[in-house]
Image 1 (tube, one colour):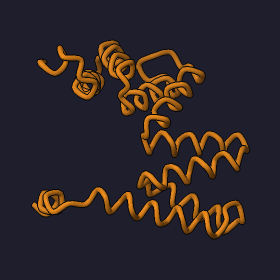
Image 2 (cartoon, rainbow, N blue to C red):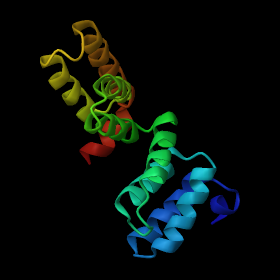
Image 3 (cartoon, rainbow, N blue to C red):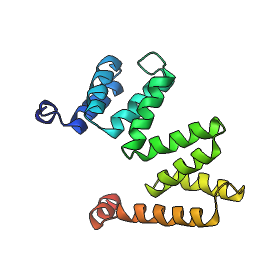
Image 4 (tube, one colour):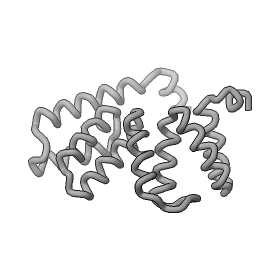
Amino acid sequence: MKRVAANDPVAIREIGIKHGNNGDYESAFEYLTKAAELGDATAHNGLSIAYLVGDGVEKDENRGLYHLVEAAIAGHPDARYNLAVDEWENERYDRAVKHFIIAANLGHDDSIQALKRCYKHGLVSKDDFAAALRGHHAAVEATKSPQRDAAEAS
């Protein structure tokens, strides 16, 4: 609670998630909103999902997309991928490809698969696809560490 009192957005978000998992959506929404106001990308992503599906709040596509964009701008790979999917569904393929490339460069696996399909259909150039593959590989490699490998092994 010390970190929450100090306005740590990660701690506030985690309290919100805990409330949501326990079915207290009103408290979860309050905590996630506070964390998002403090700039937490994951909180913005959580709020986007809540608004887009109406989970604990009234369904509101505009607010959902607002939080999705905020999360993507803040570097949340899932949010960037979901923006790409939204662009794709609205037949804005060039914008979707750009979002897929950004998400791939953040290490998002599904985005690489989407780009592979786009490449096969001629929607992304060979050079752009190769650059996205290199970026994805670099992002994945950057997350590796001996400590993480040891933790996963045990």
